[in-house]
Length: 305
Image (cartoon, rainbow, N blue to C red; front, side, top):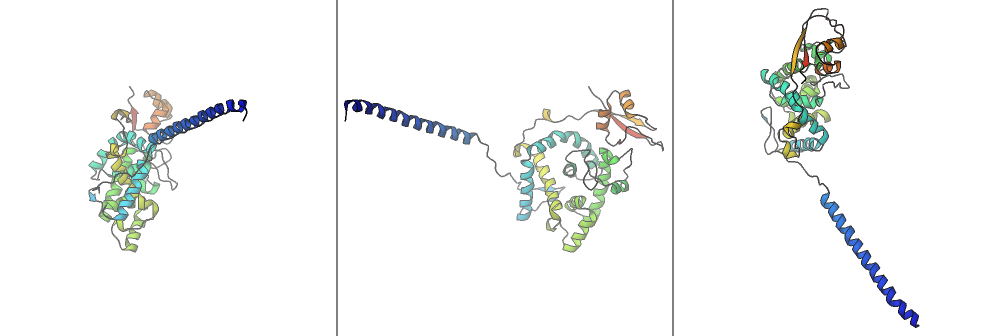
């Protein structure tokens, strides 16, 4: 081995050692980074199922595996659908402040406000593929049967107070027929005719024993899940302060007993925009009102500060 080669070898060994040290340090650094990323990652798990539960004062048999699993499914679906559930919580005071007193006055359990939510997702203008309309999702024929005006210019299925009163009448009639609020809720979704036919066909008089198809089979459990989550938000990971919830807007009533040629002008005369008029009175379906019969309508005007 030449003298020149002997001088080069230590340098090569040193460079090799430094390179190996660099690789080891890089690996350690990357390992730490990956560990930090794992620690920062959010992990999801099951949600808490109550030990005891009632719906409209009726005990829910959670000792049954099928009932427990059905409720668990809806709790999971609504707990992890964060954007929608947060919107429900923010909107609840505005709608429940109207619905709660009407349910109480008509002797319908307060839990049915969550049926209204399940029906419409707090979307006053929602129209189902079958043509059901409004927060309570009334079909045209049923709405007329329960005292709601449904026409081209006025459709009271969009009128929250009047539609809630009509819904109370329907629900109470169903309770006389079935004697159980869970069956009342199920029949609201599936229809009385179908519900009654399945009770007879399956020889079962209890919602939990009936096979009612995918939608209705989940429907009552979804109502229960909404009740559980919205009444115990922090337990299900929702931190919504009272200040973050949408405020109840003060309104005044202007009675209209004759025709209105132009609701834009009517709105301006009452200090609001046409858009604002329609927001608070979605039951007014045209930009005018003929009102040939001279009926008195109560139009809400928001008191904006």
